[in-house]
Amino acid sequence: MQSIGQHKAIEVDGNHSESVHGSMTLHVGPSGVGRVLNDQFCKLVEGISSIAVKMPIPGINQLGRGVYSLFADQVINEATAGVKAQTIGVTKTVNVGRSIFENAGHSIQLVAGSQATIEAGDVASIVSNGELELRVGKAELRMTSDGYVRLRGDTLFMELENGIGMVGGSEITANAPKISLN
Image (tube, rainbow, N blue to C red; front, side):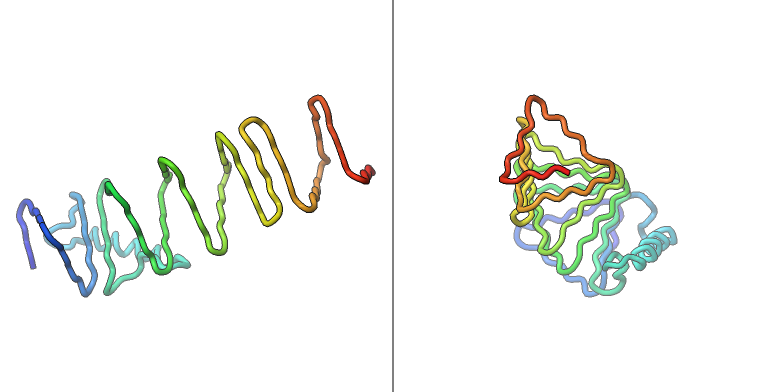
């Protein structure tokens, strides 16, 4: 057991290794968790566990050996000059109370082996200043910033409840060996 009254600094010139055979909790902040694990902290952990146990995927209810928990009263900052990599064996869950912002200086790539879903409660917006391309097999929807829209595929089928309205600018052209109207 180690008890430190004021400050602690660790400087390692070589390698640093720690093994925890049970669980490890790191708490940062003045919320009262200190010399003795108090009732408020126990209620916090119990509250998180009771919510997580209702989740259909593994969550933070993993009490017992091999669990690492990090709590901060205000902010957690991470910075690296190089690369940060995460390897997660089964599931990663992120729960955010309000907003998530991600910025990349050059590109973002999301790859799903089987299924990808984006769902918005009110408004979903995809904005591109250059070109947007959607592809499914041989079907393609391509839009460019100069107003060019191309829909390509084997068959186009439209089923509309209230009809269709078309405004053709200066010209509407239909070209096919056979055109059936009504």
